[in-house]
Length: 244
Image (cartoon, rainbow, N blue to C red; front, side, top):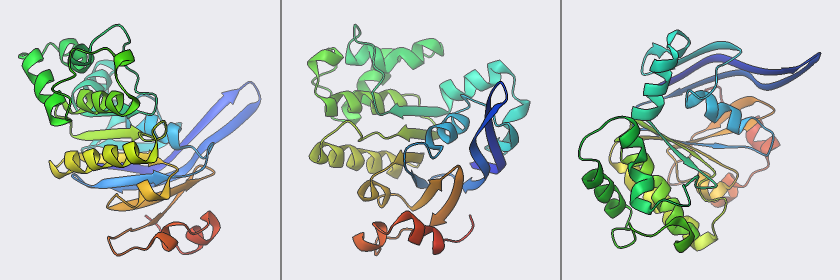
């Protein structure tokens, strides 16, 4: 579903060059749940922007469902983002003046879809908010706002959901409920790539990737993996990793 081949991303400001990504190689199969861990400044958000067709690699290839995205027109990129990729962000990114239902249905309206309101209500019901769909974000808790954001992502029935620190602004208990919801979404067959700095969140994926200084390494995390293994220092983790 997702394939990155020697992807680099360099930001230039006059003579200054910042290498955000350094030769990323990654394959994600359809239906996988992959978590990406790493400290601030490691390149996680840059990687997510490329995966979401929001930015282009400086070099290397990104293939989405077998197609080279460098050959996509701006319209093709926009259609891919709108119809095939769902986004969930740490800050929710909800429109404050719109109700939960209106926020969820916006992607469908932009795409000119049919049965917009019915599909929006179904998506909100799927995340347990059928009784709150006419509330605005300011009337919802942080956990409820994140559920609205997830409903907005799944209402399009995307192939992939990209989540950037979806539990970062939530307390531990609410964060656990959000991750339970992601597992439910994943069980529908949707591919999920989730960025986190929390090892407890990372272990919930099929496998986890460590990103540091713009480079990836990988460890497969199974249900039998222990918390101690997950909490290894980055240095030790990298030393034990295999190539992707």
